[in-house]
Length: 133
Image 1 (cartoon, one colour):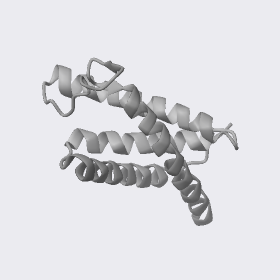
Image 2 (cartoon, helix red, strand yellow; image 1 turned 135 degrees about the horizontal axis):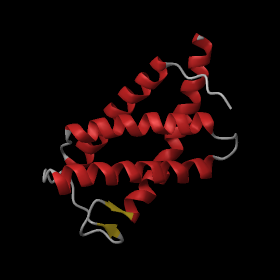
Image 3 (cartoon, rainbow, N blue to C red; image 1 turned 90 degrees about the horizontal axis):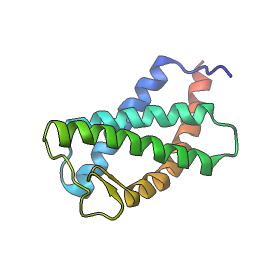
Image 4 (cartoon, rainbow, N blue to C red; image 1 turned 90 degrees about the vertical axis):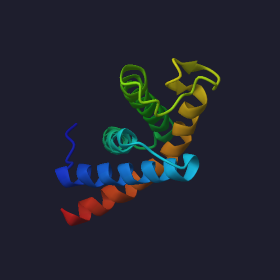
C-alpha cells in the first residue's frame, strides 16, 4: 500500500501536536518542557501516519497501537531526559505499574482514550488535505 502524504501534512501535524500537548501539560501541570513539545509533535505525526496506513473500521486497534506508540516515545524521551540527563521533567515512580518512573499503565490508558479524538482529527484533516491536492 502506498501512502500519498505530503511533507506539509506532516509539518502541520507536528505543529498541531507540539502545540496541543504543550497546552495540555501547561493546563494540567502548570508547565511543560521543550522536549515534551518535540515529543508531542512527533507523536502527532506518528498517529497521523498510523491512521493513514490502518484499514478502515479499526479504531480500537488504532487506539491500542497509538497508545503503545506514545508510551514508547514517552519511555525513550524519559530515559534520555530524566535518567541520562537528570533533568527530572517527570516522575511516575508513585504511579502504579510504572517502569523506572518513566511510563505507567494509567497514562498508557489515558493515551488510548486521547487517541479517539486524535484519530477523528486525523480523518478530518486527511479529507481536507485531499481537497487541496
